[in-house]
Image 1 (cartoon, rainbow, N blue to C red):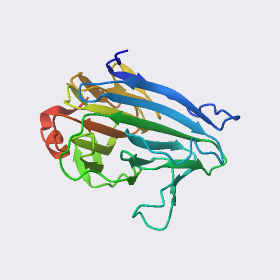
Image 2 (tube, rainbow, N blue to C red):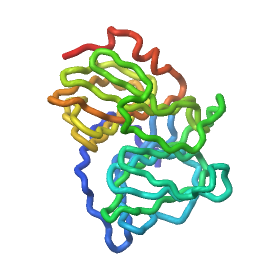
Image 3 (spheres, rainbow, N blue to C red):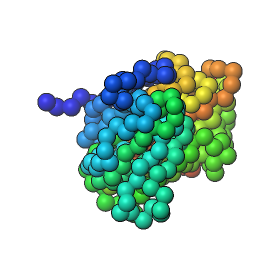
Image 4 (cartoon, rainbow, N blue to C red):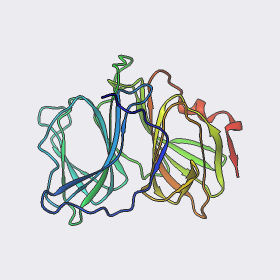
Length: 259
């Protein structure tokens, strides 16, 4: 059966989600399908109770991002890598992990409350351009990340680079001032947004904390902050056939305006 092509969506996420006390893990699907450049792209949110792992350390072809929304987990890393002697690393809310293809991994919840986390997983034709990103552990909570400020936006680059599947994978954390925003436009890459605090308005919907937004390449979308406080959110960009640096995308002031 042919996979469905993904379209733009807003997915409200009201935490905490209910765990499965018997198995210790429960998944909640958000979207799954394909896009112009990706054979498969999926998103789900998982709930993992204290002391449990979702699976033994395993590997898979897909590349993956894990973004922790609440609770705390330990990353359990493989023994046969050059990552240093600490095979368990603490992951806290607002932090994320990038797993490259075939990288052995699992996690264990260490907080008393269940951990709730978002997973992005994708495959695409091999790009073969540049030195690919390695495993990485990143903090998206830092508002002073090196970046760009323009017309009500503060954008800090978290990481970017080629992967085995993508010409470029980019993550940046944004702070959008009340009343600020941009008019509808299209991107040549797929975009996933996760709101941490405040609210944004896009696709005719208001998105509050933990809400998820997906824009496939080529579909128009705009955004503004309709609230009274700054909105803080993470942006994940999946570049396939084209690659536009962050500074170039933000460099044209005609794209940005205050509502």
